[in-house]
Length: 117
Image 1: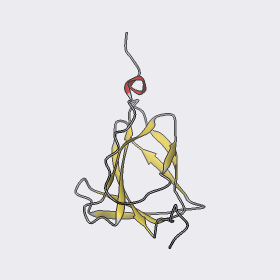
Image 2 (image 1 turned 60 degrees about the vertical axis):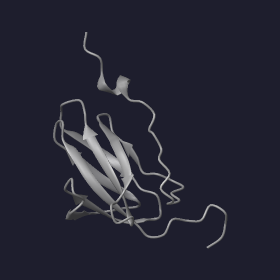
Image 3 (image 1 turned 30 degrees about the vertical axis):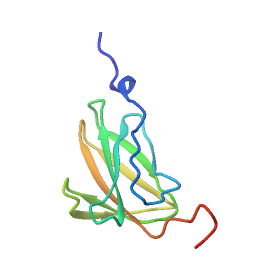
Image 4 (image 1 turned 90 degrees about the vertical axis):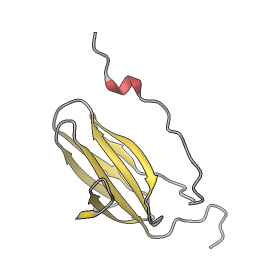
């Protein structure tokens, strides 16, 4: 019996980096999942790795927090390849089977959680 890969997903491990990120991006798709989230090497962006895990072409909507002002497709070394369109805080995605996409979400300025600037 083959188990669906989604059944093996576990809760993420959070490592404190000192960057206050109150709201995270979310994905709406039947077969695209967020594989990992980390702070970029230059500490100015969020790196998001998306995985198509069911072996078929996929479409999805990446809902962005308001403090993300641009999204770039990157290689695994975080080098920008192409800027993606954001419409109403949403990025439309298309993925090939078993593809991994690395996205760089540039942070404008995370909102303060304590009301201070």
